[in-house]
Image 1 (tube, rainbow, N blue to C red):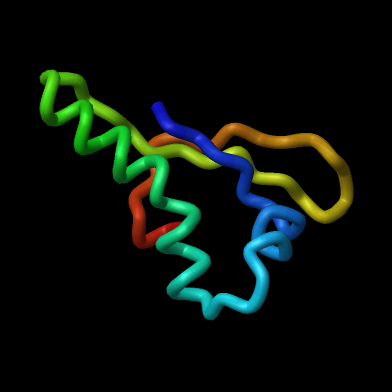
Image 2 (cartoon, rainbow, N blue to C red):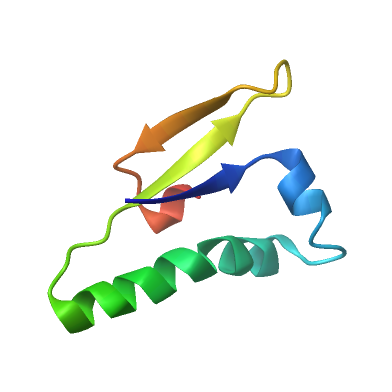
Length: 69
């Protein structure tokens, strides 16, 4: 399972990308891991570490698809 932090601070740090560019950048690690997983016969799943604006807690969300990111 590949999870990365999905919160405002992460996306603010990317600079002036449009939403498509931000999404592609966010999914980059997952795509690399999935390609390697296919090469070695390992299933790689996507998840996110979602942070709400109201706290610094990250909630792990599993079983999502790229179109939900």
